[in-house]
Amino acid sequence: MSALAIVRGALWVGDLSRYPRPVHDCDGYALFEVQGRLVPKLARSMRVSCSVVRARLQRGARAFTAWSTRDDEVAGWLWVSTGREWAPPIRRELHFAADECYGWDAGTLPDHRGHGLFTELLRYAGWRMAREGARLMWGGILDENLASQRANAAAGLRPIVHLSAIHDLEPTTLQAWPVEYADERLVVRALRVVHGEDQ
Ligand SMILES: CC(C)(COP(=O)(O)OP(=O)(O)OC[C@H]1O[C@@H](n2cnc3c(N)ncnc32)[C@H](O)[C@@H]1OP(=O)(O)O)[C@@H](O)C(=O)NCCC(=O)NCCS
Image (cartoon, rainbow, N blue to C red):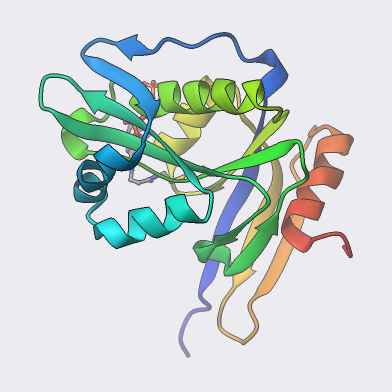
């Protein structure tokens, strides 16, 4: 008998009202939001085609990057959406309230890892989104992804609900339950993110 295909993770959140003004430059890296000119560079680092990046930007997703001034390349990136976004690991569309945003599909090129780039990108993107009215930034992290957990914790995010997605049967069965000591108001919001208004 084959093992069940279960994806385990958690939905994390950062309270953007507590975010300090971040640095824009750190040790050979500049942080900024990608506009049209940098699409090919971002696509190259992400190993996707330019059309994938352009389609995301056209539908309103935002891309924040850490640019390596030494190597002239996008060393790290973080996508941020509002409204709704598909979450592939749990095969579910997530729904965000008007004052929420969602960080997703982050990455740092292997040669640039461990320099705090993801942590700084989370802070920078969170600060930028806060200036535009967002109060909370959500993110999904797999339980096995210790590097992402450390970076998110360093950037001030914390887990609110555990997620467990069982993919063997269609449709996917998704379970969500509170993390111990999580703020109840954030748990309610997290369940709305996962299940929509009718949870
Ligand atoms: C996760 C990822 C984006 C982190 O990028 P980064 O720029 O290296 O992140 P940071 O340097 O800000 O922080 C990484 C932290 O994890 C730690 N870390 C790195 N590899 C680790 C590992 N294998 N196990 C545990 N901790 C690890 C680092 O030491 C650092 O913690 P510290 O600051 O307490 O020392 C990068 O590893 C990556 O691209 N992974 C593949 C894609 C991915 O997982 N994306 C995120 C999806 S949620």
